[in-house]
View 1 (spheres, rainbow, N blue to C red):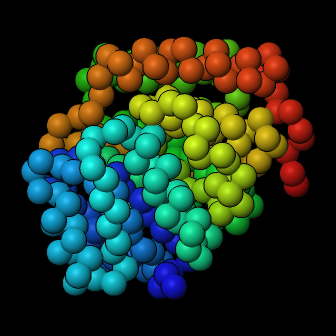
View 2: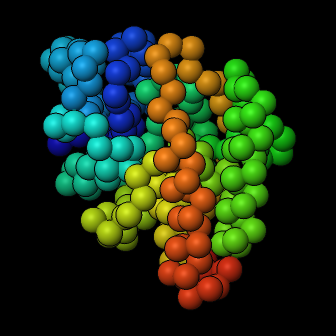
Length: 247
């Protein structure tokens, strides 16, 4: 049985430089959490390092995958692992310190009244550190594009710092999730929104990685451009949920 009702999933590919410090920060939180590292056979040795951390800390678990298959596939594997165990709150979190572990208690407080909590970089202002202007403008344009096409009232639909209630994850057909890059974030949020699940946003400060290399690519951007149209058609061209949000 898990030692905590909260699980933080961190997908890794070449995050050996960041994982020890990040896991230490998570285990030092006043709110107890478990950590699941989903490693895609990182050539830098992140997987064996995660195994060593797991051997020393019962709160750390490791899921090895045979190769790099994308962010979405890694998270879906982690979600299935979480649903097979007694976790009530399941987090998505980057492995490069762009997300602050100290924000987790605020997410959990918001999750008492929401099915999904999103860490927003753009709610009530812009809070992004260490990004070039071009990437910031691209991210802001993507957020506006998603809202314009789908009607989904979320300020940061591509954000990757999230907390799901168990019931929200259990409602999803994870095998039917089609996107894999950052559009994966859009797809899951839209599926829950159009099903009438409640969504809350918590303002966060996003700090781009100082160690390692970004996983952003042109293919990821192109996937995000067309995914919103598929979401719109799946919702019957509605720009509102199929059913009302639950109280």
